[in-house]
Length: 378
Image 1 (tube, rainbow, N blue to C red):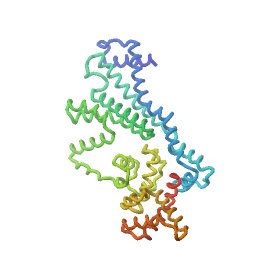
Image 2: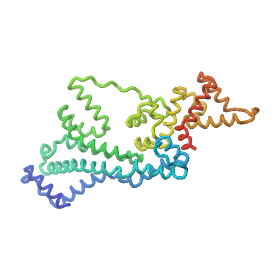
Image 3: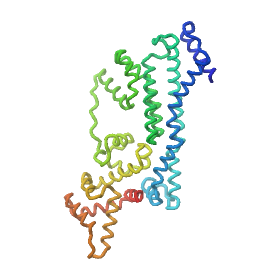
Image 4: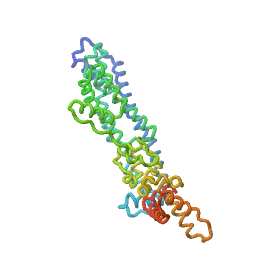
């Protein structure tokens, strides 16, 4: 491989007519260039590789260990009703097989190969260009112009930074690796576009520094630059997401959900929390809580804030309150009924009748999706 790489470097000098001016490439120099090239590729895929060895299994345990047999049965009833032969004895094993089938390591093979091909080709061109710069001491020569080299290196910086951050959070999915390939693929056209849209003094640093921004930001900048030159009206600013009405969901979390196509509270209320955890990278317990809040919100709307004042934070807590009320109903008439008093006070503060709020509690508690939530927490 070393000799092949040396031949590629030498051939590159001959093609560019640099044989007379360039210093001959020794075997040591070829080895050094090859080592740097392989090291760059290793750094690029190392976070994904280590995640697949360790983080993937940890994430699997984080999700599946929270499923008791009753919760696993309830999960299949709510989200996989086509699987009918599920019982308490086999539910856990079926859930694990389903998890591996839907989110297994094999799904990373194709995106990793694509990333290595795209990044490998671009980094090789960068290596050859930089070698020519060293040989001729002329930055105007080489296979690629300066702006393109800087754009590719900027894309490399962003991809590695993104992968390392995701590895630290145990949050790398096949889609993230595809996005990394896309980021490399658009680096060259973005560099050429910016070199034409701005002066050299701006286009060169911007070509690299754009690597510090997410891909979505680059797409936004491209849209605005295009709108300026073709006199299109810029897109209106997005309003605050409806999801941010829920406790615990800020702009960052709402964007993660929106990226998965979840834009309303009703969608979140009945979304598969296992898929949500895998695709957003957020914790399973956190997603489970958000889904429970969304389910509760569907019945109470903004009055959920009042319910939280009384310790009823979501659908699972509502099921607990329902059980407490049923136990008080079967108790002796002379026994105190503190939970009935809690519901009465809550109804008064919400501007509802006791019977109306009690019926609402019954509806939430007996919802099959609440049953799944309750079995997970208990």
